Each structure stands twice: as structure tokens, then as C-alpha cells.
Length: 430
Image (cartoon, rainbow, N blue to C red):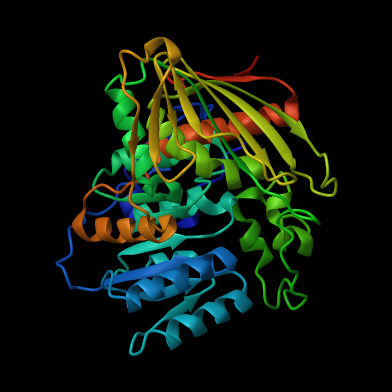
């Protein structure tokens, strides 16, 4: 998979002129700049953070609306001061909302995200663009001294994910939250603690899924005929790192259905479930992934409507994951251990011993606090932007998840299993 070229901002930024990554971690001799971000300190309580959003489509405006609600509820002191989108229609809608709900706050709109990042007053940016832009925009934002909330999936490829990971390793004072909101569920924190304490013995097999259904097909978002390249849309900028294709309104409005622009079910849906599960089991990097499935109902969609993944990890563990957009019945969410099992399908975490160990291990159920996970994840990010404490959904785990996403996608399209070497970053078909 080819790597996106560094953006003009990253190439020209004096703060990014530090290190150069030379083919590390599977980059196959291609070069990526690793920026050095300026120093960044905490903000006193009550001093208002200045927030920007890059990407004002459905997801971006959803974030905007929820954040404005949190602002109105005084959950954190911040103002949304800048918005960016290559579609003027989306940008105008978002500007109208942000201005009408923030009396006295100047909110500026941009079609070029690099102009937005050039503003020295902005503390942090939320990136809600299509996933082929995530890595470039996130690294550019870090180079500009902005903390980042990056929507999932974190990237399109392993190489991009490791670029982001290496960028954050080089800039430990910066904060990057990945938008996998189920990380805010307490049950996964409890499961990780119990597994680490050895309460289920060796964790051997975990299983999870994200399955949903529709009558006509998935990601069939409405098509706005007013969206026209050269008039309301900068199509070349939308294509960005992937290279410019001929404009197709279906691709623009429904890009998750197309394999060039998205990993479909695997990246858009399964990352929600795999991320907290991989956090809970804490088995290191994936080392082998196989995936199969197909186009069983929604045959017009290029990406698959049914997938099944098998993932093997460094520390002797296997995970199975099911994903569907044509049937809503999922797998039971659980971790199987040699001595006991953890059940995570409800809001709580429940431990039940295996039959052979019932005299040695007591069953237990931990009742967990109920949260609105996406709102909690954004609030966690904003609070960490202020305090400089570590945020919940971090880049290292997201990079491990992206190994699964990338290799599962390759497996689906090639028919082969794929291996990953955590020491060298090399990948190979088996």
C-alpha cells in the first residue's frame, strides 16, 4: 500500500524540520517526516480552550452539535472558533450552528485546513474527515502544536498508523485521542485488571462483533445535487493523499462503500469493538490475521457486507470478530480463560469459573457506571488538553488495531492470511 506524501505544511514547517523516518516499521524505504511540536503547557481552570473542527459533514456536525451542548452545560470551558470543510455547503451549515449557539464568539470558516492550523490561538482540533485524510491532517496538527481528536479508524493503513505512533512517540507532551468511544466503558477497565491479576488464568480466546442490518444497504447517505466540483466542492482537495479521480457523486457522498476510500465494516464498525477488547486482554501486537466473507445481500456495494476475522497475538491469544451490515445478530462478547470466563455483553463485567475450577474461583459481577461514551470520550480529551494528563484512547493501541484492520482487509481481497512482525514492521502473505 502506497504512503501518502507529506503535506506542504509539514514539509515547510520549521517545527517539523527535525527528524526523518527512514523506512522504519514497514515503511519499505519510503520517507515520512516526524515533526517536533512546540512546547505546550496546561491551561488554568476557567480559561477557555479554543477548539477547531476539520471536516463538517455528518460526523463533524454531529460532534459540533454535541460539543456545543457540553459547552452550554458548562461541562468544560471552551469555544469552537474555527471550522474547515472542502464542501462550502457543509461549511456554511456548520458555521451557522456554531455562530448561533455561541453568542459573542467569532467563528471563522476555512476550505484549506493548513490555513486553520496556522492560527496560533487554537489549542486543539477534532478531525472528522474521510479516513484517507486522517494521518496527514493529524500529523500536521501535531506539528502545529495542536492536540488532536481523530475519528476512527485512525488511518487507512499500517504505515500511516505507525507514522502517527512515531509522531506521538517523538512528541510525548502532545495529546492525541482516537475516536473509539467504547474505551470509556468501565467494564473493559475491570476486565483488564482482572486478567492482569490472573483471575481467569491464561486468556485463550476472546470474541466480539458489530452486526447491523438494513433493508436497502449500508452507508446509503443522501446525495445532495447541489454539490458540484468547482462550484461548491473542491474535489481535488477531497481526494488529497489518494490522488485525484474523476468526480463521482456516489463516491463523494457514500465513500465508505468503496475499497479505495474505506475498509468498510472492518474499519468503520469493528474498530469500535476490537479496540476496548484488545485493551482488556493486553496481549501485545497482532501477528497473524485471516478474514473471509463476501457480498451476500448488498451486491452493489464494493466493500463486503459480511466479514469474519481470526486474529492471533504475540502473547498466545486468539480473537474472533464478526461484522455484518446484512444481519444484526452478533456474537456474545466475552473473554475465555483457562480457569474462568469474562462476560462483557451487558454494561457490567461478570466472571464465571470454568467447571473444573468452581471450588477455587468465586463468581463475581462488577456493576459499572453508565456513561454516554462518545460524549465522555470528547470530554476526556478536552480535560486532558487542559491538564496535560494522558487521555483514554491512545495512539499505541490504535496502531495495534490498525494492524488488524489493514491485514484483515488485505486478507479479504487477496484470499490469503497475513502476518505482521512487531520487531521489524514487515508484513507478508502466508
